Amino acid sequence: MRKVSQISGILRLGFSQRRPSCGYNLFIRSYCGSDPSKPSGPLAHYSKLVQQGRLRHDPYQEKVAVALENLLGRLEQFEKDMEEYHVKLAEWEKRREEERRRLLVEEAEKKQEDGMWASVNKQGKMLLGRWVLGRRQMNVEPGVGKWVSYLNRERRLDSLVGSRPSPPSAPKGLYIYGNVGTGKTMVMDMFYGATDGIIKHRQRFHFHKAMLKINEQMHKFWEENKAEKTLQTSISSWILNLPVDTKVKEWLAAEERYKQEIQMKHILPAVADKFLVNQQASEKGASLLCFDEIQTVDVFAIVALSGIMSRLLTTGTVLVATSNRAPRDLNQDGMQKEIFDKFITKLEKHCEIIPIGSEVDYRRLAAEKSVEKVHYFWPSGGTALQEFEKMWTQITDQSGGKITSAIIPVMFGRVMKVPESCNGVGRFTFEYLCGRPVGAADYIAVAENYHTVFISDIPVMSMKIRDKARRFITLVDELYNHHCRLVCSAEASIDELFQGTEEGTLFDLESFQFETETEDSRLRRDVLAEGSVSAAGAPSSIVSMLSGEEEIFAFARAASRLMEMQTPMYIEGVRLSHAYFQHQKPQ
Image (cartoon, rainbow, N blue to C red):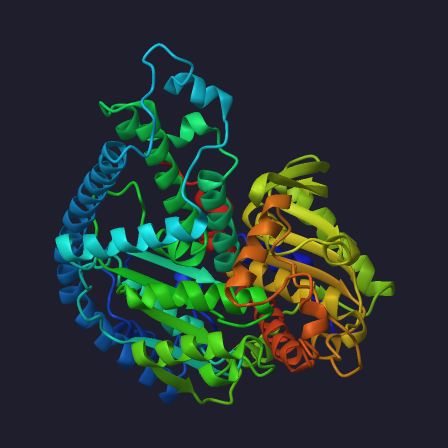
């Protein structure tokens, strides 16, 4: 067993108030930033950290920083152009909706004049109120006829109002790829920080959080537009207030519902349109998406990401993304190849592809230079387990609270029980977190609620238990992304924890990050249908979902992050970066 240093030292490090020094090229995030009130450009920020000795100069990182600096300069004018575009778009949408309603009323009146509907006795049984409450089947055009009418109406609107305004030409974004620990996220986050005050609508997502948001938005869209809504709520107020008879209103309401059905068949563009922009914001401008760790884990991810990202790029969103793979290497198993190839072609058109070619894993380098490695205890049992238990006792005693079980909220209305909880410190076993059907939503909830997480009984992982291994990798990703402190009791060292060579099987279309309500599985089937994939038939139609290479990539990333999470530099940043402590700051 490696040397276990005194626990008091790490306790002082973990809750120190002083700002940490960034000694090596780690994925250094907000706790190594400059004055947040005056964000500098990514190149200036990077050069300053190198001059101060906080980073070791890396020509590949510098090249990316230069490209991001150039992009930042182009974004200021693009923001002004997008503000003007959104004004034109709002005017066009308003006029088009007004014309659409006028055309609908003209069509309805013509049908009435042609005697399509019998006149209705004003005091008869066909009053609108009775129609609403009765929810009877309406006499409407067959499906094909409605589709033809809908298309003809859309063409007339194009001739009357004109086509949708085109967004201004967006500056090319960046797609940054390279090995684990080479600084991709670091330079992207420097750029993201520098855009504060320049871009109104900007978001930074890790892959897991982005997929959860997509699923959440799909669920919300379904709830707002599902066919089972009562007829009373489906009739727009503008129809109810028209001075026409009941039959005309019935036909107009049916046409409105048909438009909603068409929208439901194109759910991904609708979700994309609400993915970044705050709908409550009165000001509209450019949109920026910083996307960390783009990957393809299943068919749903490929279809959903392809549809949503293509829409965002087409409508003027600037994308800055990181990945371990070049774009053309993301989908090596060939899942939904036609859909994915179209997306990659669009990605290459809208983004400059830049590799970080360094072979140095700076996380591992910093960990090797750290003298104190005191919160990853191995092997299981003996002195290591005693020290693990001793650290749990000292940290919980220091927190000043009582150890109890707790219930924390999870996305989609679910909850998760925490076996042992004490003022921002939580304790779990490996089996509890990774041996059950939980996923990224649960791990995000843990990471948001606990600044320090203890995990015991971590086994050596191979392809034989790749489902548990992938859950553990997702867990490490989220704890790292939220800058949590992780204390582990494991069977082997970090380098030996992921064997990743033995045969195994994995196909879980629902994946680990999408444990939601029953309706959401229907949403996923709808999205898969856009890619001509049957959710029920997917396992038999895909011979090799994951060959093991994806897991090996993920294992390397997790090991690299576990290395960094041991370093005093990382631990010092917990108090400065974790949301638990941010919420405790005086307002």
